[in-house]
Structures are given as structure tokens and as C-alpha cells.
Length: 280
Image (cartoon, rainbow, N blue to C red):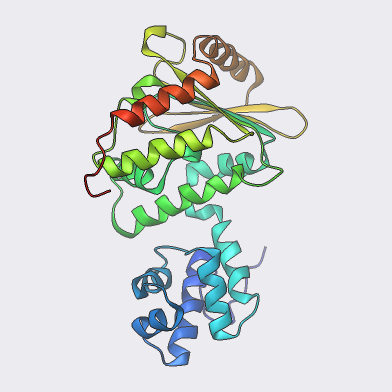
């Protein structure tokens, strides 16, 4: 295939192209970042981060920019392309991300950290920082992870079951305020009709997935694939016999977990143990 001819000289990468377009529009208007923030009522540093590609901003911010610049539809279209661009995820996850977006239902087991689909930005940031990310890459990966959660929104959202090891809930964030936000968020998500949360208590003892974080994806047509992950690598498993073995281990473990109602009470009890900020 012949190489695509570059005419404008601008980036062909969606996220970077969005950032470039924002910067071009602002500089063309003659406004500084601070002036832009004052005119639109947002912190000017947000626009700086958007122009550097560190964050995409919310649809509301992008719509305000469109109105300000008089470019109806353009910026939102670029924002959607950037938000949906799988290259923002590390290469080994991209096929998984494609399949996740197609899944008709999902099942997860969290052995050490909460599943990305249930993480708050503060939780995601601490987990990714512990994994060695920092600076621009850290902020991009936090936003990418949180952005995936749109999968669970809307009337057509797939059902999602998450079994969370008690050890996950016994490992708080360093920032108690962010930990409260995460537990609050978890309790709220557990009330959604398409989300089932179960806690696997420590008293359940040993089981077949002691050291494995696991996600099952049911795909259109009924085929199921699995994705296993540890701190160093992830593996997409598509071979039927291997997926079947993992499903049996998951089902056996689910029988040991608390019911959804008991699990939500457990999360709320953990929330009560977190010290409240004296200023609130």
C-alpha cells in the first residue's frame, strides 16, 4: 500500500492532531491561555494541558471552545477520534481493547487492584505511578483508563460482573480523601443495573485464581475470550479449552464470594473505617 501523502504537515495521530488544532485556533485568535480561561470561565491551565496533549478535556469544555472559535462540529469530531484512538493504550493491550469495545458482557476478578472500569482518576493515578509512569505519559494513561469507563454508560451498556478480593479493599490509597472517593464510587457503581459487584472474603481460603487478575469478554456470536494480567505482563487467551479451564476456576470462586447485597454492605463498612477530613 502506498504511503499516505501528507499535505498539511500536521500530525496524523488523533490525540496530537486535536492538541495541534486547539493550539492553532488559539494562537490565530491572538489570545493567551490565561485570556482564554478568563473568557470561557475555566482554569487556563486546563487549556494548556489540552494543547500539550496531556488531557483531552470534557465534551462540555470542547463544546465551549467550538462556540468561542466558531467551528461547529470540528473540535468535537476531533475530540471523539482522539478519545476513541486505541494507540493511546500500550500496544499489547490494543487487541484486547478492540474486543472489549465489542463485548456483549464482561466478567472480572480483581486480585490486587480494582478493575480499571471501576477506578476513580485518583486511584488510577496512584496505581499507574506505582508502576513507574510519570509526567505526560502518566496523565495520558490515567485519562485513557478513565475514558474506557464510558463502556458501562448508556442504555445499551453491557452487563459487567466484578469479583473483588477482600485484599484489594484492605489496601487503601495513601491519600485518604482519594480513598474515600474510590469507595464511594465503588458503592455507587454497585447500584447500577448493569453492574454486579461481589467481594471474595479472605476467609474463603485458597482458590484457583490466587495470583491472577482475569477478565472474560463475551463477544457477539457467543464466543468468549479471556485476558489475564499480573504486574509485569498481560495475555489475551482465545483458545477454547484454556478459556474453559479459566471459566471453571472463576465459577468455583464466585460460589465463595459474598452476595451482591452483602458485598455492597462490605464496601460501605470499609468506607466507615476511613477517617473523615476535619474540614468537611
